[in-house]
Amino acid sequence: MEAEAEAGGAGNDHGELSEKEQEIIDWFEQVTSDAGVAQSRTLRQILQQNCGVEYLKPWLGDVNIHQIQDDDSALESLFTSSVPLSSHPHFEPFLQRIADGDSTPLLTQLPIKTLSLSSGTTEGRQKYVLFTPHSAQTTLLIFRLAAAYRSRVYPIREGGKIVEFIYSSKQTKTKGGITTGTATTHYYASEEFKIKQLKTQSFTCSPEEVISGGDYKQSTYCHLLLGLFFAHQVEFVTSTFAYTILQAFNQLEEVWPDICRDITHASLSSTVTIPKMRRAVLDIISPNPSLASSIRASCQRLRARDWFGLIPELWPNAKYVYSITTGSMQPYVKKLRHYAAGLPLVSADYGSTESWIGVNVDPSLPPENVTFAVVPTFSYFEFIPLFRQHQNQNQICSSDFDIGVDDFLEGEPVPLSRVKIGQQYEVVLTTFTGLYRCRLGDIVEVSGFHNKTPKLSFICRRKLVLTINIDKNTEKDLQMVVERGAQLLGDKSQSGAEVVDFTSHADVADQPGHYVIFWEVKGDVEDAVLGECCTLMDAAFVDHGYVVSRRSNSIGPLELRVVERGTFKKILEHCIGNGGALSQFKTPRCTTNQLLLSILNLSTVKTFRSTAYA
View 1 (cartoon, rainbow, N blue to C red):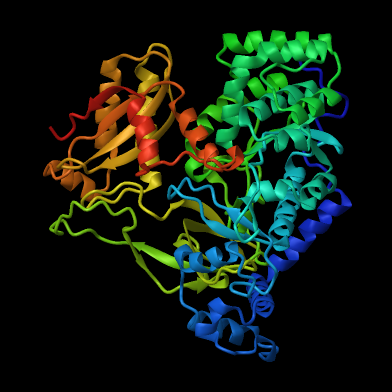
View 2 (view 1 turned 30 degrees about the vertical axis):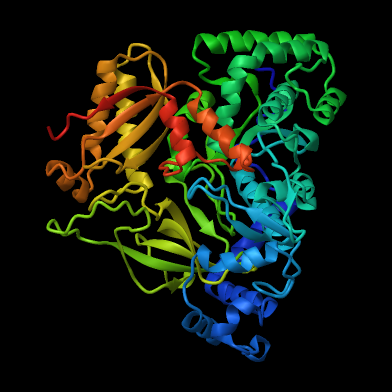
């Protein structure tokens, strides 16, 4: 699309903040100026709100929190010395009782009407987490705060629009009458979502009927259609995860002729069959042959250059692309940059289904360097120092596959005010929504401070991805190995082939066990090149236990299985079919799920075995 930027669209290099934006930044500067005090007060508020709940009684008994006056540090000491560290399984019996209709104060004194479901992509099953008004309020707050910091660097026009690839899944009822669904589904249905658009003065192109349509392909088509219909009003492109944006653009590469036809005639493709979605979209669009012609010409140019620069070409006033690009989203950054050309990729904020944690206060940093300043009023945070063990080369080997064991020694948990720059930690949460000293399973590193609150770099999930013997490889180790293989693939293939997506599995069905990496590849590539990639990846694992085990043949040669195009879309559809939402989906980087393995194995078209260590 020819750049037809409207007057004033470019903004200033350093935009002036609105009164409301400056107000929320001032609030954050104030609470982080003495983050330790803010944390002690937050813990007091949590315990006062939830005093006497059944979960806490074994350790706090009948202690009246309200009577411990004016000494937040004493309360903090009592809590951390009395209540043990926990993990999600400790809370599952209580959450199940709530789901079944038990209304006694089990985890919180607040009445519970809603339960969130985690994505389930990490462990292959969804988990319940309480969703309360506090959950929606903190989501609104962090979105407003992050938007204010972005406005300092990338000012946008008031009243501008957003191409926002967001999706709700169905809400259901438990047998106890509690509403369940993903956290994003609850949020998009909340009043806070509407308030967020008003507070940030930027509005999603798509109506609620598209967001909650229930069919991600139909919703994505409508997101794309409306995003292009309002092309010159769009200020940025966003979704929760980078993966979701790539999925949408993959679809755009196929359906752009249909979108151009719909914009020309104000029609809607017959592939959109949901009545309320059709009505909502047709009520918005009007015939615009000139715009359709411009989009058609742009798509023809983009197709000729493999869709490089798709975002600035189609949305000429867009200032940036905004999504989560850390952790399991990191492998998608390269392709997202391809679509964005020189447009900045701004990393979205750090949180989980359990709690929001940190905000990106440096939006100009690239995804590889992004950090998140902890918001000390959202939850009470503790940090377990982690230290790498020195592996014993003579350690007795075990063929058991234990994905829960890892390679860290732990120090004593420390509060937010005592973390050190350069140290890695596991995050521990005590939340307003009924989790107490709960290990999150995330490994972070303290990269610096914003005032007196730490700025965290996300490293990886703590739970091991791959282990068979004495080998211990994390998600980050796997990503680095796959990046090496993908680089060789791109360098050696004539067609510029690329890895679309990947996952892995530790196969211990036969001895010796070995790693299996599944690749979906776009483009033509010779078998000899794929064989080289397989061998390179095997040799690229630097974990000492893996190297020793490969040399002694107690772990067999790595296997690369190339799956047919569309395989990872089948996995996505399987997860959505089990109640997940596209906006919450993350490809599992390692799986033991037999249904997913069945999809992968049935879709395998080529296999290769490493010749490293031969």
